[in-house]
Length: 321
Image (tube, rainbow, N blue to C red; front, side, top):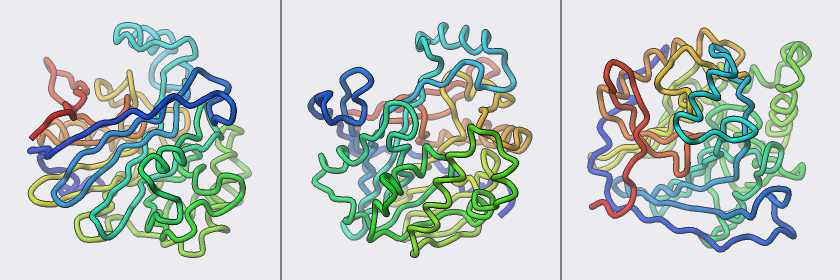
């Protein structure tokens, strides 16, 4: 599929039953976030038909204000201050992952940076709090092969989810395992190339997908190429309800108010901008319930029209019926 399919969105209402829980504070000794403030491993759940979708978090990192091509650093900082989210180190990015369960399969969307970036590495504790071991994950869908989405797959140089099928778009596999592209890439992209090679080596059950694909009944890959050559989303749909996990289509502070603001990790700024230009208005038109990796936990929300512009509206995820 080329571009953005209408199938990427439908109304996400009614939301179904939602619940939230916050786990006890982790001690500094032995914590993956030991260098930072005391950490919690939050979780939040939403029902989409027969599916339970649990939002988990691997941690966070603060991205310098200069990391957003299309705006001067001072402009990004000013926007962050206006939204009361300015951090000394820049814009705070969460690393949200999503676990999909239907009583038969457990599917994880992305695996976080696992300590390779920022104050991260909490995903294993988050899964353990659900009573799950990594070997109980049946499949992992990777939205793209940046380090903050695949680090948890190969933490410690091993296959972290030994019984899982792994689904990654073929275009991303080709890009991130190309020696010529790796040799010509800047230093900040080298971890993504290195980790991608490890993923391919350690996951013999990797399935390279082509654009849209149904993973299981009610769970499908949606083509959102632009942020990377094979950037995808994941659509969860059942019983007339839906949620689309859109990964890095939406970044905090700068989106969705502006489509021309990119992120330093995007190699093709024009392609990323073009996809957002199509994506944001359609999401707003359809009132789609979406989840985004880097938005404030649990990353659930909608894009809404706002006096000729667009804004992010966090979903009211507690006590819905």
